[in-house]
Image (cartoon, rainbow, N blue to C red; front, side, top):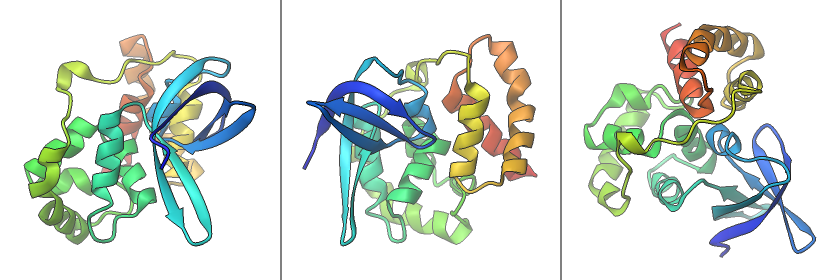
Amino acid sequence: MIAFVNGVVAALTLDSAVLEIGGVGLELRCTPGTLAELRVGQRATLPTSMVVREESLTLFGFLDDEEKSLFELLQTASGVGPKLAQAMLAVHTPTGLLRALSDEDVKTLTTVPGIGQKGAQRIILELKDRIGTVSAAGPSQQRPASAAGGWRQQVHSGLVGLGWSGKEADKAVDAVAPQAELEGAADVAALLRAALRTLSKA
């Protein structure tokens, strides 16, 4: 089991980061919010979770241990695999997800592509009593804002990675552009969640 990795960010793709460690490049699957905080050429430490399948080994990277723990907890629910668990963390912060589970907020969970009403109800039923094992930061401890440059590409890529078409992603990016300009700094994770809310209303 690889608990965390520490190395220089060698490359960033639409849904992953490559960290160079001892001359070897490790590819980590990450959410858009995590990728937004990484910079090529800079050193980073990411908690990791390894998913072992018969045909593959996939390493997922996270900003902190809280996000990693929630990722692993989500997969204990029936029908939730690593891809859906990562999508949930791409759409919502750990705090938002824990609150939705605690409050039995089906509507919030169904904003995640791939989760319908029955699926949300099942996830809540199975996880509500287990969320005490994961601690979440309060609203005052949100993810730091990332640099404004490139937020459109990151949000667009995140939406496409979650299953929306390029045309739908374009419209959602345009819809949240005023929010980015108003805030003066592009918090990619927040803008992605806003874009998803726009798509869910369409």
